[in-house]
Image (cartoon, rainbow, N blue to C red; front, side):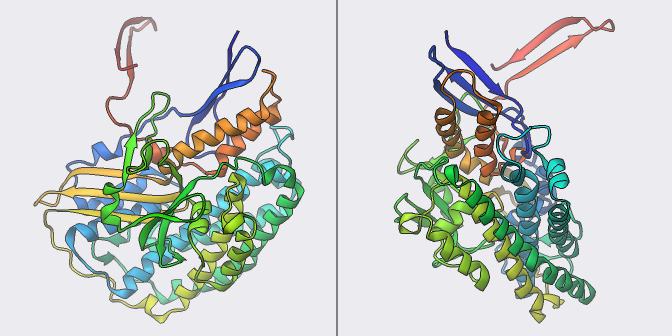
Length: 474
């Protein structure tokens, strides 16, 4: 008899998801899928809103990466209205973006990922969490909290709010950075440097401790996609490059051309869409995004310490390509160090306190695309705007959606490796969850659907009895 194992919910994620394993009569994994069981419809209910409101509306999609939606929306509006930002505005936006990267990467690495490695993947699940981490190493926990706070405070200083920022507007920024905020941010970022180095040192220690499976965990080669400027990673701007599993460029395109290169499909087991490269088809055209992809695509970083780490990172794989899914964490902490270094460069630039931070954006009809590298991967905002400046249509493709096909495949690969007898241990199931956590999926960002959402409405009387049921979809 076949059987099903369900992991629900997958723990230590942003949002709600589950994994199902379908076993055959011999207890072997026949199929495995990652399901997203929540639904949100931002693309639909933004229709009819003024495009200029989108930088304020879309950050509400997520409380972890609101800056990415804030800036991608602002960039899409800039494109619609055909404006070029003042240098100070571009630098302030980039500074806010790096601030969020510090906050988000520190949160994921220390709070969500580290317990598996510090406490062990087979440790008691009641202690294998951030509370257990605090109990095991209180000093490390305090430093992790401080690093995350540095990023959050810098978002607040530049963005007006620590969560759901408001200062990026079509044409620039609504306010300059004050000299006081510049001074305080400079002090905070100086404190953040040794903490970012600590994150890298800690990962290397953990990689040595768990080396028996880190190098072979979810290692299927794949294509990778990210923003670049030349051979350099750029989190805020640039063209989109896709490389294959051997490091050769498959395609490269400007943000406005993305729809000529990417298509999306749906599968019946999840509300997440499945993107792929149009010319290669599905599934041959699937790819990965996010920290691992960015460091595989880029040949260098612009800051010295992170660039040195990138060179060391590339030594882990043949031809400089690292395919092991668990090395998403190594790539993540290298990016964290890069964002601290780059934020320090920006805050030291006198232009950062210039009062010339906006140009006039004149309402007009048009189409605009904003692409940015969010912590979890390439984020696309595409708006169609009428002559009143209102949205006729919107398309959002977030990092987690790009990664969805690869994430689903990784779950299957890891499940087949660890589940053999139909009675897997809790530690074996946790390793499947670890595969999901590598991608740091943000499911509230990613849950958009094509077509009708299945819905069941029950009418209940005062006694609590169901007197009528209406169902749409299945």
